[in-house]
Structures are given as structure tokens and as C-alpha cells.
Image 1 (cartoon, helix red, strand yellow):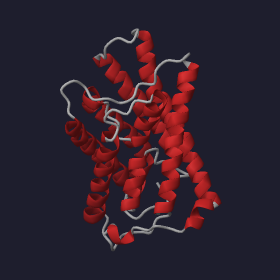
Image 2 (tube, rainbow, N blue to C red):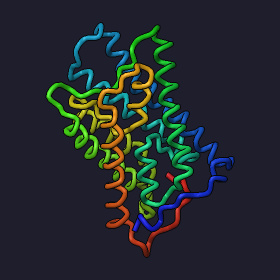
Image 3 (cartoon, helix red, strand yellow):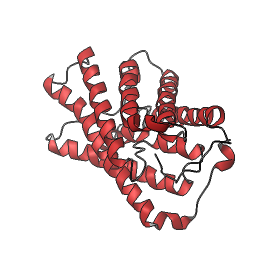
Image 4 (cartoon, rainbow, N blue to C red):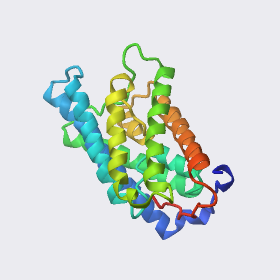
Length: 252
């Protein structure tokens, strides 16, 4: 069961070299991912003179995020586990795979990485707006929360199946690709409704730089609930206690 394995950790852990290196890796991975993902949206706006969204724009956003996340997870995997997402870190915490202290370090690094990426985008594009996530016309806040719960459940379930499960075997090799693919697919499904964040850090950076906070809570509540459900379901039903192998705090 995941709940009994939840660990707070020691405050001293925050100063350990491996924890700080892992946090730095998360910062860099999120910066890479947000720069590519948010940058693709800004490029679309540049090419269309801030025109309305189109199916082609949605496909481009899905592709940019899928490719960017594939790379971001890959480059961080051997150092921090390649979470690249506060919701993924929360799922790992709920499953007992990372302490609360290290989780907080990751969250700080992930949020800072997103903010820095958006600041770099704003500067390098000559002051273009880093658009914050928002709800489409006719989509209520609670509609979007459900969207984020379901999409993040799919993401974190994929993380568990391909990267966390000790029985994963050779399928772990494709974990970054699978994780990128599920994010891209979810953007195709939910992008037209609420932007399909699935990642509080991805939503946080643009909100800070543009200072737009309308319905921002949606992009925290939904992903964290979806992540927790996925972690509990996978741990309880598919990672049997008899085959569970104790994993290092950031082994995915």
C-alpha cells in the first residue's frame, strides 16, 4: 500500500549534494520543456498575427510538447528521474518513491525553470506575450478540473507503468517516448477546451510572466488529484508487495 510508505525525510536531505544536483536537473529539464512548448505557441501567434486557434495550431502544440517532453525526461532520467512536472513528483511522493523534503526541492526547481523559460522567451521574442492557460468559451472551471484530472491520471499512470513498476523490464527503455506521446495525445483531446496543462509548472511560468491568474487554481487542483489517483491505483492493484523492490528516492 502506498500510504504507509509515505516519508517526510530529514531537513538535512535538502542540503545533500545528490538532492541539489537532482533539483538542478529538474530546473534544466523544465526550462527545456517549457521553452519548446510555450515557444511553439508564441511562434504560432507570430505566424498568424495573433490569429484564432486552428486545428493545425493544436497539432503543432501537441507535437512540440510531445517532442520537448521526450527530450526533457530523457536528459533528466539518470539524475533526478526526469519528473519535469510537480504532479508527477506528487504521484511519486504518494507512492512512497520520494520524500516530502526532496519533493519540495523538485517543486521549487520546476517552478523556477518554468518562470525562467518564459522570461527568456519574452526577452528573445522582443516582448511577445507568454500566454497563460485559460478556459475556452463554454468551459467552466469544474469542467476543466475534470479534464485535468483525467488527463493527468493518464500521464502519471503511464509514468508508473513504464518507469516506476519494478516489473517493467525492457519497456523502461521507451518510458520517455511513452510519456511524451500521452502528453501530446492529451493536448489533442483537451487543448481546445482548457489548454491541457497536466503540469502545474507549465501553467505557472506563463501566469507569472504575464501576471494572469484567472482560474489558475484549476491547473493545480486537477493535476494533483489525477496524479494521486493514478499513483494509488497503480500501487494498490499492480505493484504487489511481494514483488516490490525498494527504489531510490528519484529512480525514474
